[in-house]
Image (cartoon, rainbow, N blue to C red; front, side):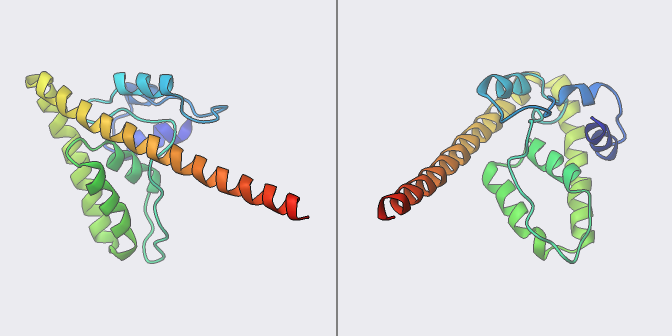
Amino acid sequence: MDTDETTNTASGGNTGDDSAQTPPSAGDDGATPANQDSTVQNGISGQLGARAKHLFTIPPHPDTTFDEENFLTLLEGSISLTMEEKKRVIEAIPRLKIEQINELIKIFEEEKQKFSELEKEFSDDVAKLKAEREKEIQMQEIAQEEAGESEGDKSAAEELKKKLQG
């Protein structure tokens, strides 16, 4: 898809095979565990594997304009940040100036390059760190699914209650 190519180009000028790493989202009603496992296996060099849909949603930031897709791809692909740290970055976005956001993007791109270099020399260590981060992501995805199911259950219960009351 054009967005994947744009994202990869914007995230470091690499228009190589990275775009093939992102699973297609057209016709996908949600990421299945099988899809998630394949994205973990196909991680981009220096980053965690891309996902069919983002874990985070950027809150409104009326004072800044930036490539949110690229930002989310870099943030979610970060190997060095824990899930909690990624959440704090997302929560801070409305308070950040564009210069700070641009600096974060630069840092994420540098991290991607450094981890790509480290993977060549210390592949086992980087693989262990990636596995830890992927496990955090899977736990986050499960929590989001459960929260969605809980909201669905609540609304279904409310509808049933309204029907019974009448």
